[in-house]
Image (cartoon, rainbow, N blue to C red):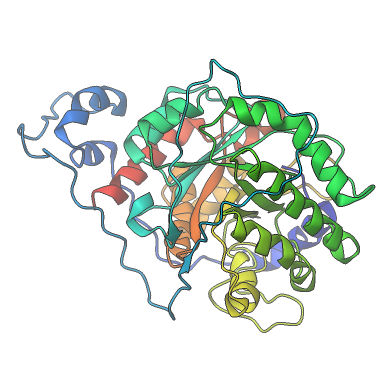
Length: 426
């Protein structure tokens, strides 16, 4: 989760001016006991013990929940029609055979991934678009979140052994995977760089067929100088993965980038990804809360009340560029949350959600830090549901280690699970 440090330092220098009371309506979260009453009877026995229910709690009579209640989307403000794109079924493959040619591990379990056939996927992926970014599957509640919440998307980083289990618990969940890779630079021809990149990671791709889409570079910021190069790199990576029946997640851009004129140069990669049924991924963070700089314009554009310079920034790309061009591509916000930096200190030494809890309570987001954080995620969830091309967003991060501990959401996974269940059975 690299950072565009200079941009962040500038943005956060504005915080003293921006810390005004939040006027957004607070989302009331269900209690754990109330959530359990929403569950089908088959899930009550193994779930109740983990939700710390009071001794006097009595489950609903048998048969009350023989089947889950129909999933209905949250009532949201209407807007002009969201573009609906039927993804092409083009299965053509380039004739060139790359070298070397790894083969799948014969011992790997065959797996057929669920891929939405059109955009928006609507009820295929459930009402909520909230998912998890997972570094290590090191907590019981990660799998419980998947089993009970049936999230639209999970992002897996480096460790993929548990992904097949995730799919068994929630077959419709889309999994985006990324393998850490050093040496992101714009050296040589982009096609050759893409071949080297794919060849270095292909064995892991083939060994983990439960991953639906593979990301490439993490948080690139090519600027105008190199965006054309990067678009060609992503085009070639899409084609190479397609030769092995794999799908690509292109982009992977960091918070607050690219600028609009830069994104225009990325359109060839968007076209190729659509041809091969790929997706676009972006990261969206803000601090001290998710509404910081919301409603602010981008250079050369007027301000709009439904998007900002950081959160829901993707709407600029879609409404100003992709929708008019007929290039609406499915989107995953593959990292999302609260993130800040301290001055101009280099490296990943940022402030995570733990550091802003008192401020959120003061601003009326909730009665305590975890509730206030989840209320902000609920606001973002409701907004992303308005855009059918959004598959979902993944909160950074479950299974945090080392430098990422300020972002660790393991302690609030039961509450996040409760929120997800409340959306399924509302």
